[in-house]
Image 1 (tube, rainbow, N blue to C red):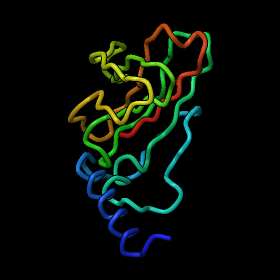
Image 2 (cartoon, helix red, strand yellow):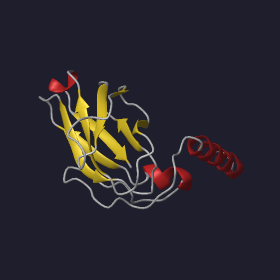
Image 3 (spheres, rainbow, N blue to C red):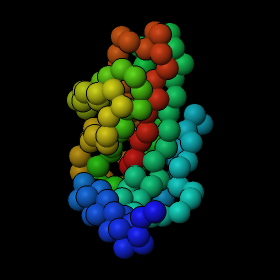
Image 4 (cartoon, rainbow, N blue to C red):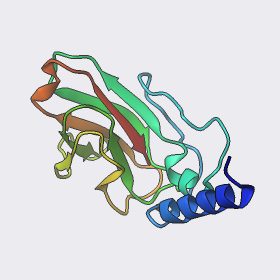
Length: 150
């Protein structure tokens, strides 16, 4: 049986390591897509991490497609960037489409299989409407699952 001091040290160390990669803090998202799931409930053990990633939404795409688009979403002050995490068995490419201005991608970012959080758009103003587009060839056999923090 481990001691309470050891458990406290482990939690504090994990919180410190995770907090170093956390983006800017902000509020809850204004809009979520119908295929999204809100992951904000539950205990908040890592407050700096939860300020951005704690409001993450999930997108899921069945097999048989090239990937697809998630959204529309609206940026908030919770994160200063748009971040995506690939929770799938294969890597994929992702880009952001700022739908009020264009139908084109900003730039493509590779997301490895089961990746951590990766920034797909930086220094985005609050209140900007966007979609995340995925492009790949592997998801004709497996579903694509991604999480979005903005």
